[in-house]
Length: 258
Image 1 (tube, helix red, strand yellow):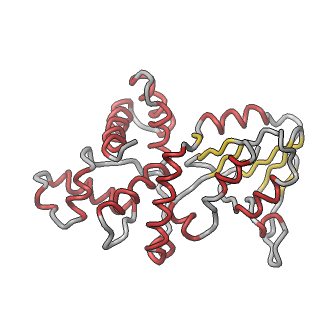
Image 2 (cartoon, rainbow, N blue to C red):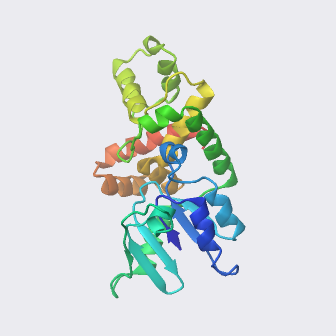
């Protein structure tokens, strides 16, 4: 089990190289356009894990660094990079150590996997396109790193994003709706002068990077009242706010083809 927000493919392959080919490998990490474009994480990690017969998962609010090899568990500060592992000329000061005897490793893994999702081939192709867009606008992606951990979509009609982006905000009659669109655009730090297709890819990446959105995706198909209660408790919302937020997210997911 490999759990880390940032994973470099060369280091991952070095670790996988000493693991038996018949061992089960589960990898959980976190991707954003900024992280992939800046190179702190590598999109090729998924293929490396799949080639080893493992499962590759994304967790939008991951911060933990956790490694388990059979019965050996290590937790600490180190991501899976050369500098963090001490395999680079210039090394980070990191720590990995065995947790206390009463640490519930199995329960922790279940909790992480419960809120993670395995990347399908379709989603991976989408991430490849997202990376291409982020790389083509590299200066924007690097100069404006952003966190949307606290963001959830405001506008109920995601088509309005495209209308406002194209400079036609006056076509939206409601000023409240215009303000909602602007809040979303500011939160997502959408680059300037991109095509509508690139805009949609960028928004898709933001949706896939948002904890609230990915929680709605995970709860999709369940009872709305139960899902709203889970979201309300998790994000400190009223039931009505959680229900409206979930419905808004569903509008976005449908519009952007999820």
